[in-house]
Length: 332
Ligand code: AR6
Image 1 (cartoon, rainbow, N blue to C red):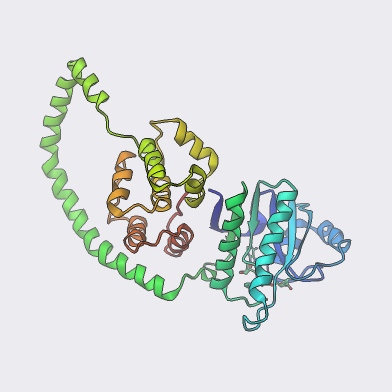
Image 2: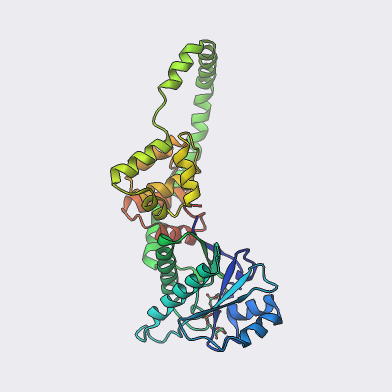
């Protein structure tokens, strides 16, 4: 998945480059800057001294020394005052110049902290939005895996209104139905056992009649891969538009394209459903072709259902919400 939002300490990331939220002197400081210098060792500071500082909105690169990352890209975010001092354009420029530098150095994977969102006081939700917007537009044109590394859970805040709407939707669909679901599944299990025994007996008979089985197999439904390609055509999208919007890696897409019986993971199916802006019924159909279903006993599924019902197909917003509710993200 080209863009991933994860919770971690950036100094632990096994990537080609990590980005440092530095100051104009490039001589170290607190926050993530302090963590990176401590983990990389004194040789990092020695190289930084040779760089002659860095202007706000720009970026410079050094080696990673004792870090698992090969490079550190040092960028200087704006100090947030009131939002009317060009802060957003400067922050956008940090992401643009850092990604450009990573590309020049042949990096295939890069990890960013939320620049400016600590000591420099940029509101965290807005800093995250800038990060997601800039990285995703870069990824439309470039092949790279980019991580946004969130250090503390509190840093990750989706809008209060969206959070409470989703929480309410989960409440309505999860809590009650979940208890009902358990009761229901116990009841269904008891009911199904004898039916399954009969079915098994029939299946054995069918197996014995070889040609019957051949016939049944030749009438198999359209596969997941076939449905995906059909929907891409129907929507008038190119393959690249579809997998990029789904935040799916190009290599994975080629595998699906070339294997008619490809068995995707459930998050992959859902990422395509969102990218193709499928209705709820179409989403369920596509899931079924891959052997899955949307369940009301699963928060992840309910959140996805919430977004599809509200016709909000922005995968990055959906991932923010999934993250906020401690669920795994789409397109992984
Ligand atoms: N891994 C990932 N993220 C981290 C880590 C870590 N180890 N440590 C902190 N963060 P900040 P700024 C998060 O203050 O706002 C320094 O003194 C943190 O929770 O490090 O751009 C520089 O020298 C926050 O969300 O950077 C500058 O003077 C985010 O990283 C100034 O601070 C950025 O917080 C730069 O301030």
